[in-house]
Image (cartoon, rainbow, N blue to C red):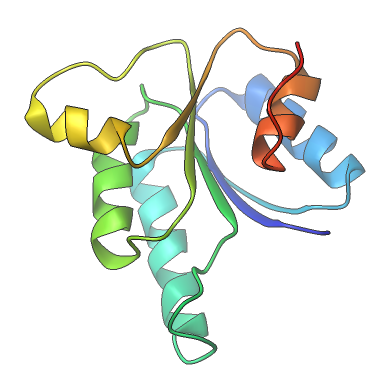
Length: 133
């Protein structure tokens, strides 16, 4: 099954690796370089698909780095979940989500993949499998 995936990753090399491996597995990938661009693409796609189904999200999966320019991954996730509470979000980051009670609530709503990880583990997490590596 082909997934529609939005990725926010400011590291060019990492973003390219994500794009290549996910396309190899037949997925459609949209890459953004910072939190603000990610939200712009998300809201644009949300508006474009708003009448398709009220139960669906504009992307099957949103992948966020925690440490990004303009807006952090946590800020982006919170804004996305405000408008699309069912959106699947995966943090692919070397930085754990730490902070206040808002962060504790966010941890319950998102998945986390600790860097470094193999590209195979990344694909498995995206596709909803438990990573075996």
